[in-house]
Length: 447
Image 1 (spheres, rainbow, N blue to C red):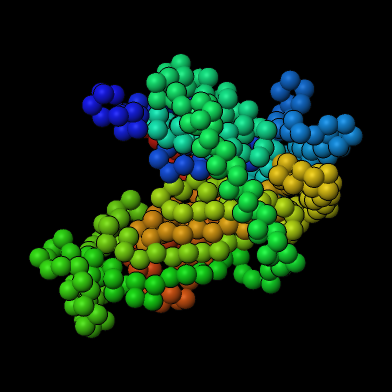
Image 2: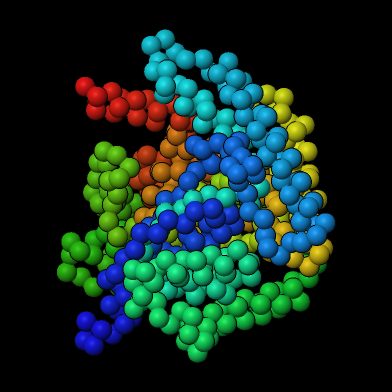
């Protein structure tokens, strides 16, 4: 196989399941960057971080920190987790009282949805240093690309983790990873990635010095094709006709609005659930959104792979989002104190010349700026999935805004209308219906 097809192509045939444990939430975003891999990440929505395995909370301490700054880091994050731990049972009691179980309600479904609501509300207290577990499945070629990027990363945690992964992967697919740490092969590749990143930062600092963004909405549609719907109509007709692409586009431009609507109605059909999506004609137009959302929501949205997403460094500069329930439950004082200490610690680490390391200290309630660029077919998937009632309120709000802007700002009303499972409803206990369904499945399996 190697002789006939070459190592690059044959490396797509060998896949590995890899368990990546104890990775910070900074590292998980690096692990999940590649498109051609599958990921499953432990969620802060469902797992409480109030335990202390081995006598310490579950967060990463960067190797670059030493002396008094390291001591301050540990003390600050311990206070953060202490506050989270103290408020978790109180938030559960608050939501249990606010949303009592309906008559005949499954006790387990109601209890789990109340628990999830409390975890959702408090996760903004947790720092980006909070560790998680990620399951990855990928081919040898995909792992090679991931490791090359990780070995070029400015954070010691990421580089050290790449070494650990390489040891484990070589137990299964050694032939596909031979060049990763060869100096004039993978080493030169990683050097190139590190050099271009440093050079881009230098020129950005020089040319954009003093620039500060003006206040703006959480979600902004920054780029789209005004003729996008016409192009989707032409693409929808392509496989059903014998005309060339440019002629179909000309025909679509001459059609009336009703005629184009008829084409899209036939192409989309009667969707019975959100998994019934139209074909690749919807990939003919795309949307680019600039988003300023909290880091918790970014974590969830970043895992979508069939789109282009890039993010800026996590800092406290863009402010934070305070859930209404935090104030209702009386936790606002502690919530703000945790975030203020987080910001002060970030600034101290940054002032010590470690800006990338400083991001570990930032609480997940702080906003991070990122963009998402996706074609209409992927937008349908993302928007319908992430506005579902069981979704976290933070990313539901972001994706609801995306849906509205596709219809109103881009003027692509027919494309937005095809997203029939985009949910704009207000939900009290987001996980309740999903937990009810899980309870029904458990009952059916036991009968």
